[in-house]
Length: 594
Image: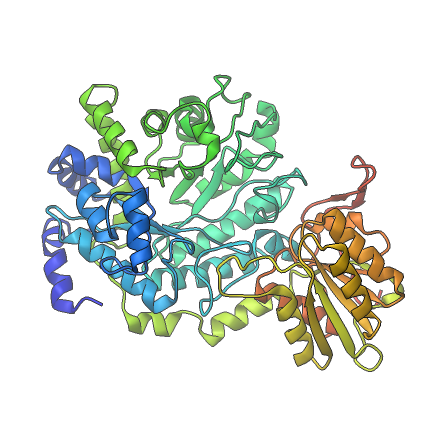
């Protein structure tokens, strides 16, 4: 970590020219003066937020150097900053940026030092996707919380605010100042493959309240929150990572449904809003994705909704934004539409040079770039990056994964677990009559790479609660042999716990054959709660909404009777054989004792 002398030397130039208080637009004169001294190349760089491989800004592993050379044409984050003067960097688990909190803090400091040492060097806005639940880049020992739909099941704005406050403090301590959360999409399509449990629910009002609460928590902790994905990604059966979704809502429905949480986020003072790579014909009939739509971003978001904060694209590597135009056109069109930050283009060199050329050719004006850079610098000032760009190991130790934070996450998780079926009052399980448990089911990879596997977590938690539990992973698509092995193992158990994950035909066969053994079966939906509609013969069913350890441990406590099921469905569950009929409505959830 840089010494204090190094820090002061690196920041002296910026600090001398900017005595920034971070309040509203009070510093615009100083920021405009700073922008006026930037070269065109530096201005273009400020608009980009880019991935980079490695745990260190200057000394990544050789495999990460090779990946950087292949994808970016540089060896390290420091080289990328020197060449392109990027204004932001996004952290990913798969890019090996997030091994542990102290390493992340060192990476953040190395990035800031590399940027501040440049001529007219500016602090970098480091971001990540720390939604919690199924999208989580920073893992244990940081505090991990239930995801959005679980928070929706808990229904507590106080819990949403606490999540944002605690998670925000931990992110800030490791040098991450912009979080791409919360998801403001209203998930009204059970077949939605990309949002689903990342949404707080299917009703605009409750979603809006939880979005605003989480925004207040994050931003009160000094981290920019990001409402996504504007104008609303909740009603699609296509994943915009791989296709180009079309939202068929009318303008009237958009106003009543999709727009409501974004309006709430703007009222809450949201620092940034992320665009969606979707067609929304009622808002723009051109066929362009919202990310590239002037009517949507400038006409509606800026004009009608009055938003003057930072607009960031979703990843420009996603298929939804690349379908209609080439990679050199996309960043230029996004800026013309009203975007400020260009996130993670497939080729930084192609995108950076395309924007540079567009300005030199007169398609984009330098004044247009200055508008976005001013918003970006306002945000950096508000987050204190000009005064305090660096973090300390002491701050990491005092803040990240503290016992108080972990206990708060456990308490919040207990309020989210939802009991949907409990025939014959099977739950809670009695340790005297159901001591020996078999835990089977899917073991999806940990969102952060640091937790799980789910069957093991459930088995360990139940054993700690006085049962004797054995884990037998069966996967998301168990073979006939795997099903037979699980059925045989069930003969020696007093009860079976099975985790379902976006139920498949083979998972359904597994559960049905386990029920046929006569052994009591408790199913836990570890992702979408809609699974319950596919399994009408299961005597007990819980929705946990994710397979992160904190949610699985809470489900185990409910199964054991150490906690009461208090969650209520934030989405309706329709019948599998008749989707027009609601099987379990919004607000449904059983309690023990009735």
